[in-house]
Amino acid sequence: MDILIRHPVLALLPAVLFVAAYVQLRVRSGRGFLFSRFVVLAAGCFWLLYSLYEFGVQRELKPDGVPIRVDLAVVYPALILITAAGFTAYVFAFRRRIGQSL
Image (cartoon, rainbow, N blue to C red):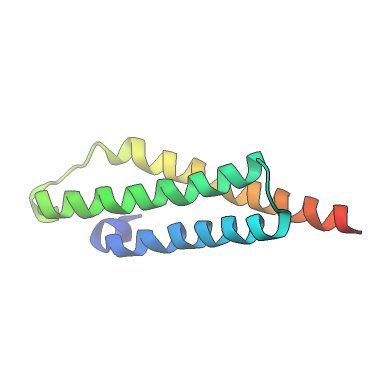
């Protein structure tokens, strides 16, 4: 995950992918609240917030001047969990919708 520190713009890629997955699920399943869509959208928003946070850290602190970033001990496990939850929710919603249409 060191590459996300050096190039925070790469954190926008998962954000865009999760938002695109949300839009695709929204188009396929129509209106109404589905928890799986909410989780996918939350994952996209979380990645977007992380990229904005990392841009702010890059602006305020120079990466060479800070040897240890303790904040990443909380942020990275949260990113991994929300990414796994978003991916699982997307697969579950996608497979469930296909199963209902048959």
